[in-house]
Length: 255
View 1 (cartoon, rainbow, N blue to C red):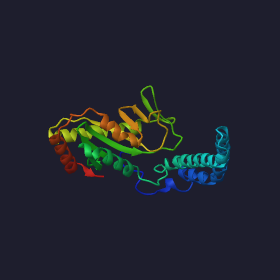
View 2: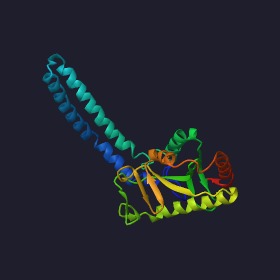
View 3: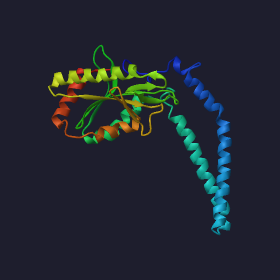
View 4: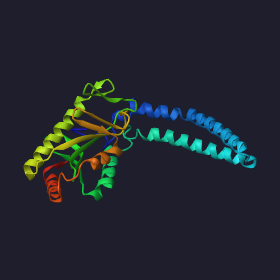
């Protein structure tokens, strides 16, 4: 988020009676119920597998088919449970959102002529997690996370996080993008417009994982590089990309 990061070190929001603490507590306490449910699903799958084997006159292989179906269902159920918990890792403070997104950006964009600079700021102004410069233009990307049941939506052109207005989230990032663009354009004499993005690591985005509201694009981290690659190329040439990257590295402070 502009002005700081929630990911670097643990604080009291991840301890005591915080939502994160309660979430982990209930998750652990519910483990036995999840196992019971998995056993029931596996049992049903065993019966279905055996019945299918009998249906196709594979009597001798019926137990094997039953075990195979049961194993697939149990493994799939375990994976879905694990995945739902893993998806909250940044919100719980167990992982760093900027590290996840930065790794994705470099892996997807590094060989396509894009430069990714992490943790940049203008003196006395807000910081951002990633500045991306490449053939399709310039972007800033920040990282944030909300509780798993927080609905992120746009109504009447306004951004909402649950029942709360999202202007306090969108406006600083939009203003930071404008400030970065003004600085880079002035120092390089290359006119640039910077598009702000917010990588949402936890929270309920609309179907498709992308939302645009109040001048800000919010999206799942895995979609950030995809959106950048989808931008029309030829906006910046190699010389301009190098000039902008060198200027950004020199003029923008490390946050």
